[in-house]
Image (cartoon, rainbow, N blue to C red; front, side, top):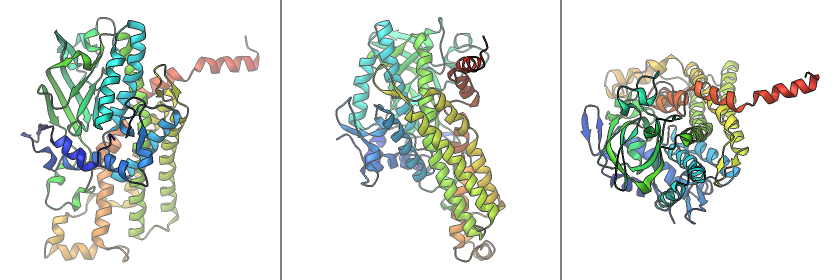
Amino acid sequence: MALKTGKEYLQSVRDLGLEAHMLGEKRGDLDQHGLVKPSQQAVAFTYDAAHQPEIQGLFRVESPLCKQEVNRFTHLHQSSEDLVNKVRMQRYCGAGTACCFQRCVGMDAANAIFSTTYECDRKHGTDYHGRFRDYWSWIQMNDLVVDGAMTDPKGDRGKRPKDQVDPDLFLRVKARRPGGVVISGAKLHQTGMLNSHEMLVMPTLTMRPGEEAWAVCCAVPTNDPGVRYIYGRQTSDTRKLEARNLDVGNVTFGGQEVMTVFEDVFVPNERVFLDGEVDFSGVLVERFASYHRQSYGGCKVGVGDALIGATALMARMNGVEGASHIKDKIVEMIHLNETIYACGLACSATGQATPSGNFLVNLLLANVCKLNVTRFPYELARLATEIAGGLLGTMPSAADLDDPVAGPYIRKYLQANPSFDVVDRMKVMRLIENLVAGAGSVGYLIESMHGAGPPTAQRIMIGRQADLESKIVRVKNMLEIS
């Protein structure tokens, strides 16, 4: 059975021997590093959930590819029910970790590549789909974490890939060797890359004739010697390195973002799934983006659950939970969060089978879902900040609690509802701070805005998918306008 435990996962990623440049130095002990360890624990959560009797049914699914029971994070969706269960699973993980749990990108990339390679083979006579089936079956049987690498640096945004001063500003096929290709470039904002066994490299936009070198999709092991990692900073991230962890906010879990550099990396042909077919680069980008926009209807809702729970608890600790305006604000938070979830479920339930057999989300509703995500979490954060109070930005450090002079003053003057301990109140305040302004806000707010594309990208897709002309025709027919 291809189902690792969290402990087995942690050992497997430790065995990769990954190294990264972090805060000015190169580190290899990533599993022990304070910035990385919480993010690995968040990934381990997704493994352990598959072994918990009360929830494992949501995380385990029979794969038609490898004929084994696999973790849903490696599954190729076979029905609209699969799509719905994906969103339900993501909400559970978001609520349980209060952060990004980093396995969604690879799952979404795999489903997009599966259908795209099938259709590319039918048109061009290539054999990409068979290669990918073999590769993904191996992923499933070994229960691996796969990161999706799509976002290029892009350089001068006013220029196409072939017109950049440096052609590596969009990842490309730089050279060809017997048995494979050599790729060069970088991918930015790579969520959970240092916690992954493999990565799926994809083009970042629709390529045009003359840009074949940039229309590449392939699989690369994360420990390939030609790959370099540079860790991304997060707000208040060095709090994780302090002796006292009360100020961290989310003590156990966290997210991770990395700049990934490909320095003349050789990729064998059996790991290449698109190589110059510009007409399918846009198909791949569009499908991946839509799957990932659906994902946000689950994961961001789960993190929203954690924020709502912390805010409601803080209102109780402050002694104001009975105030009508507080109740109204919390109801508004719930309404916004459930609206996102409703869109995530809707685009899943109305998904359709692709010619390859796996299911694709409703593209219009997936983009509506993500456009809501670019707004509603910010409003949730605003309401949480208002309810929590100004102490959110002025609370003394945990270290001062141990000071013989400052400590007693903190315990005396930060007391609110006497039913709650002062330190417990500080813990909840720090969690809210983490989500609305600290390290957790990267995976919640900034990712809500830019992950899977910024708002303009969703608006463009909504305009394409809304079939405006048919609406105009129906009105004309109703009013008998020729």
